[in-house]
Length: 296
Image (tube, rainbow, N blue to C red):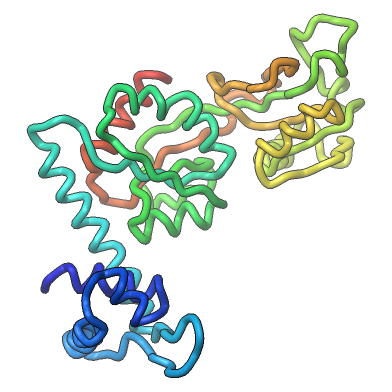
């Protein structure tokens, strides 16, 4: 079957409108309608309900259509990956590096690794999908992303292969001119932490709850945030000390901020680079993994 039918079906679903999809695809509406009928005949099921006379979206996926849409996305992603792999076999590294991760984890990747990788491989383009773990999983399964970055404890190894892991530690982030200004910032104890107003990321809450060193009831948690970037913003205001998980090379882009590792948690947690189970990485994705390993 002509794979353009799959691409056109995806566009039809994403626009939700036969006329708009035809305009985007530069084909006539009857031609697009004919393709849809062919697909439904080929697979023996109605894929889309068309509701006439409604403004905006006038298409609704059937249960069979939902399955077909998901598989069509995967097939088109495989087609793109295959094309890129063949094109790159005896040529320079080029194509699109597609990564799904949380917003907090994307920041150090963009700051420290992607610019250097882009300088080395200027023909590579980037797509970064940011969201919660459920979004990372969906982007990988749907084929929108090839690599995912996640807390290793949240990775379903029945669905995903782990390509690379990196230790994360619990760090205290604070303003040098607000907290502990009367001493050197070499070490911090839990007694120090318990006396301070805190901003905690979701990751740090999980680390604390799984430890035997303290519990949440003993801490003055002024703010608990989904992302560590938001927790750090609280600390940058001088209102709190932020506790967040980070790897050793992550940077803090605040001139007045200090960062001290709490060694009690060292090595207990890792972030993982993952891909769909059994997926053969494209050359550009494999090159990035090798590039990242060389840095860490």
